[in-house]
Length: 246
Image (cartoon, rainbow, N blue to C red; front, side, top):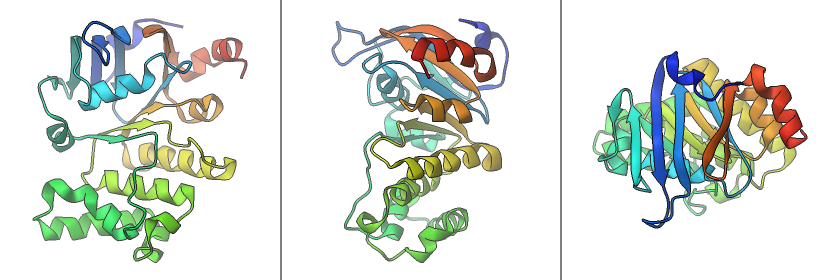
């Protein structure tokens, strides 16, 4: 197991270094956190409730301004870049709680993901069609209110909406919270496919340790707002079993 080995090698598309961030200026939830995400891999962040996992994603996406440290996307610092511009640069975020508009149709929900290029009708049409090819069930239900779909299909709509901008890095916060066991498998398979078939880089925050480890390439464990340990999943899974009784 290692604490800094990931920093020295790899093709890192996203880098977080010495990050101090919180919801109040004088109270940092994260204290000196580092995280390096390799291109085309799933980097999973684990830890108990309240250690700052979701806070880390919000800081990366620009919802929280760090008090110290740096966040780099493709080698360039994005600390001063507003959230909507981070989307243009190739970053996307799927929050923990379902964020679809239940009364709008599946197609309307997906098209919202193209807001930043809403005037380019040809691109909107092309990206919508790509999503229907990616998720055929959504084509069948394109005119149906999104709120009538199953939980797994609603997550599919969120993914499709996110993929409208063709992001390089997708931040995913507890994607199966509140879903039934069968639907959870469906969601994890979708994330695995995005990595394996499309080469997407995924940063996954999760409480479902067993499922997260099955699709992870590299794992970080946070404890009380700091890095506790890290390593390739195959090297640390035995230690995770001891630590989390999984």
